[in-house]
Image 1 (tube, rainbow, N blue to C red):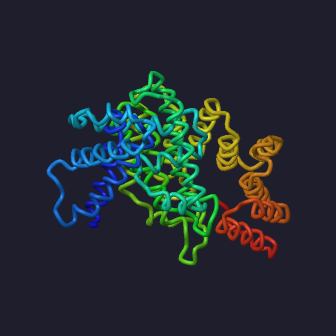
Image 2 (tube, rainbow, N blue to C red; image 1 turned 90 degrees about the horizontal axis):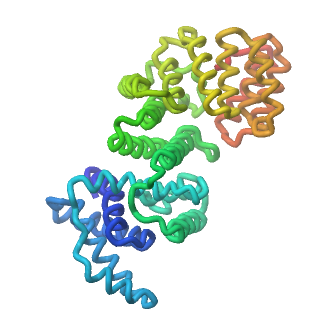
Image 3 (cartoon, rainbow, N blue to C red; image 1 turned 90 degrees about the vertical axis):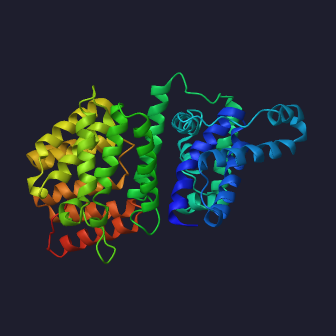
Length: 409
């Protein structure tokens, strides 16, 4: 299968699934039918050519397969007869946009735990196989299969009709959160030998582009896409040739993706003019300040500190508070930041997190407390599951212990 056909099928998968579910219902069975239609297309199109209307082709094949599957369910004979008698679903020009967005809302149903929302989104909207999703999240394929199956069953049991939900704005927040979680797991893997898994971050960006295309005037959608682009633009500079982690302050900015930065800056600039700013827009604005600075010393830390203060009033999350403390240190010195960190250490959600100890090490290093900084870095290394972060933190601690303090960023 050519790369062009593979990309086309990935784009068409959620559109076809949305159209079939909207017409017939049976989300779980429809998903299986569309997957079989995708397999048929991957087999036939390279040899026979892409149909004039590939979306309609997929929908028609999936609809026929859905009818076959329903016929096999003897307990649902009446329902099967009703479905089989219906004409093929319409393929109006505007259906694909609505269907893709509705499908995302279904996969991010509030009744589903976050891990099931993520798995179902990657399976049904992104078109990844169960094996690919399991490999990305470093779990056995049967475990991921069960996770996806449970998610489908919950969606089916909820009885939610396939239409735009009345609480669209509330659901949209769940959709954006799932896309953000997929991106962050790809950009900064929480487990496994790789610092990042590009296939996940790329997929999150692709899906967020779809949502932005469908909701171009929604500021938080544009903000999230901008945040992803501005963050992912630094990916190639985060790892050295030996696989070692390179912190932001030490990265070669010539390796940053300038096209992604320009797009991200344009997106967040436009998003901030759409009305009241949300958390993703603020985080994107912070990322833009980092990316536009010529070097670490040229970064507008007072402005970043101010943006984190606004973000804290919105979210109150401990990680935002920790990032705010870092900005305070860079803008006003380590002493006021240390007081903030010590207060955060009382928060049970953050007390054992490796980043708190890493930031404490950074602040102690800034004050000249070499022994204290080395101890904090070692503690941070013990608490992270990332081999690259462990290596970086232990290297920092060892350098300090030898009296050769290095810059931390």
